[in-house]
Each structure stands twice: as C-alpha cells, then as structure tokens.
Image (tube, rainbow over all chains, first blue to last red; front, top):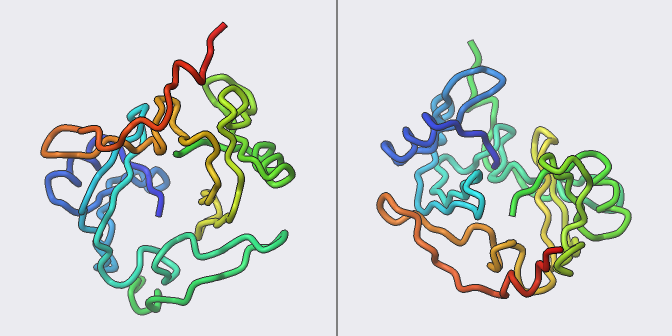
Length: 100
Length: 100
C-alpha cells in the first residue's frame, strides 16, 4: 500500500514500531489498524535517494493491508485496456470495519 | 523508484511501453532514460484500490533506476537511528548524466 506520512507519523512509527500515516483527507494522524486491528509492524525501513519517500517492509497483521479485503491494495492488473482483479480476498471488510 | 505521473505521462507510457513521468519541479513530461538511456520497459501494471497509484513492474535498462547510480533509489537502510548505504553502485552517474 501507499500512504502519506508527515513528520509526526514517522516519529510515532519509529517510537512504536507500528506504521502510522497522516490522512490528508481526514486531517489527522492515522495508526494503520486502529479500527481493523490490522497493524503493520515495521521490519525494515529504507529511504530513497532524495529523502522524500520511505519503503517499509512490514509484518502485516490480519491477512491484508487493503480496506477492500485484499492482502495488497494493488490487486488489479492491467490486461489489455482493462483492470482485472488478480487476487483473492484475504478477509471480509464488512466484518473488520464496523461502522457506527 | 517512485515518480509522479499525470494523465499524459500515463497515456505515453501505455502507448510506447516505456515509463514516462511528469516532473513537477521542472513542469514537464519526462521520459525516464531520455538522458541516461536507462529506459524502463513496462512488464506488468497494477492499480491500487482507490485508483490513484500505479505499481509498474519494469525491465530496467542500464543497470539501475537511481540517478545516483544504484539499481534502486532505496539503497539506504535504517540501522538504529542512521541510514546506511546497503547497495553497491551499478553504474557511474558521472558517465551517464553528461551535463551541458
């Protein structure tokens, strides 16, 4: 998955070992898994050449990172001019994300 | 590597099979490899759940994607509180990027 981090998100990630993002749409810090329990435990971290992107290898709890129930958010592959689902659901999002 | 694409960059990528980005700092379309010859040939493409990120598997020509001479831009790994170079140079950038 790809997510946005601000400074505070990265500091909390380092301190807790669990990946935090900053949600620009919600305007707040976001601990991945805070609702689903699908936390991401940092195993290794890499930074890119111009120091504006992190690549984190994580232990993904709960079977998947994607809020649609897939292991990866990149579950659609280009086939000709279409995007085709090429993965199986790892969990049922309606059981994990309980609204209200 | 991570790069930004606009609509035109993606259209040109699909049409040519070579990855194009849009450089926001330079304000123009950018064919990866146009200066270095290190083109990226698209092998597979995936799109994420909310359709705002592409994951491209490419054949990287010239030994590396990174302008600093590494195969990957993510050649620095976190060790304690430091970032340590953990890859070897794949090419000499001063020979590939000739200025002027």
